[in-house]
Length: 254
Image (cartoon, rainbow, N blue to C red):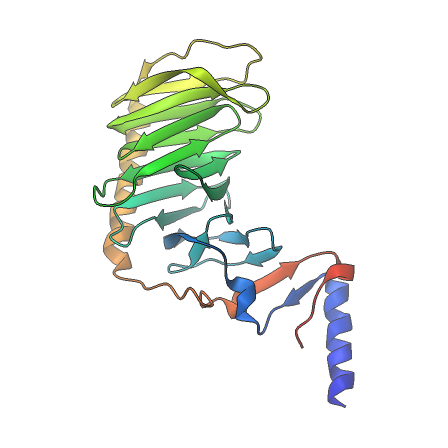
């Protein structure tokens, strides 16, 4: 009777095209710890590496590993911290898809969306790169923002410190020429076939207003988050994991 019931459940899930994972915490484990979510406004989800596992909805305390992708829905936002003291924080506004990887520096690959970075902890590793289809912003301990559109330019603004900015060519390679974008300045990088000199522009009133709004959100999030210890064994997410696959490839743990 029990076996018959399991077969019926499996068949129903296959027709729906997804399966709930009710056991096997190993499906939730990633590789090297990257960052922790400390604030969520409304809706977002995590794709765990290349496993096909989607974790939704995300909540404060959830963990991202290098190789994971975070998607923030339009009109929503997520705050992530790369250090326990919450001194290196990114405010991510939707619609944004970010894949977190690691080479010589921590890297956030963003095809479209907007982020505000607050890298204020001098005792932590603050080497970051934000990569968009048209630009690369390399930083070490500063405050800046990057806004990108998959079909348009990249906007980079610096509020404190400095950011090294390079354009990318049509093949995605970084160009040799770069500018150092200092505080209270911004640049716009278009998608072009041939190299174009990068220009530095002063921040507008609207740029400053958006930055102050992001600061207010981050300060509130950090103040309310307290000390949250991530459960890296299961991330505490067993009940919220779904596998979105072709029904023929869906696995069942029943």
